[in-house]
Length: 360
Image 1: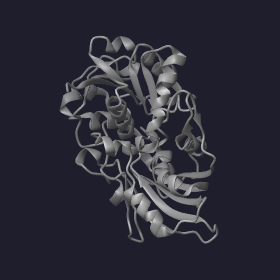
Image 2: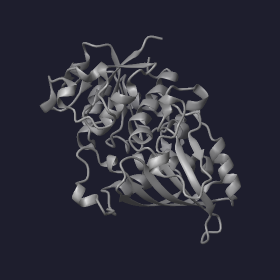
Image 3: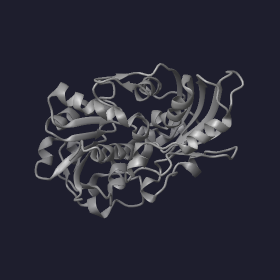
């Protein structure tokens, strides 16, 4: 098929750069417009971007002119999808303007995650939540759409929770995160604050993990999502690691499960992206590691095959019985926060919508 024209909004930030990088050579999508703040308008992308995600800016975009963040910027190009890497405090009304103008918005921002008619999508976990889109279009009287991805921390957590929830039920989740510096964007955390240190607070992060988990594991009931009935407690920390969020997770299941049963259902888990063979989908979305000291960010953050799916798989290790909760299972989870937890997830969401003919 001919490639679908896409725009990247907020293209100079760290997540915007990941969008640019991951969209190069995409078999379905072609970047035709890049948008950023007023101070960058009219300049070449290479003149203003502080490129950090790979050794070089892709040739196809380095000389592209940065356009204003506006629907007017898209009218001269055949564009159907807008990938939003805007800050949450400005994303809300801007994304609505694009959707009202008929564009499909696949957002990394948190602005619309709590909207009852906007799905938070992780395609392996809750692909059926795309059924909210006709509800959204009716409610808002627009032909476009908005879908969001989950918080980067929630994304890594929810992947192993999904098969456990389906097979054994879940009563409680207690998670402690060790989150990478890239999650703070550019310029990020000052070196004098993080070197030789751990910062045991990330604003609003714990609240996001706790309520997003319930929406993601909830059920679509005709016109809304009924949240899952699970208790979730999160403690979030910033650590001196470049990429890769590591999470220590305790799950209390409804029905007792052995370690071997948990390993089996995680290793065998596949979702809608794998069934549809979507371009950015890893063959195995969860990779179970048996070494006693894995996963580790430096070695495991790039998990995922084929090549386009590197960083899209979640690795899970140290799976063991808890010694306090009778039906407790402990594990360590790692995900690449700017790929599976950000740009890669939004691209996979758009692929799912195309496959289901919600973007044509």
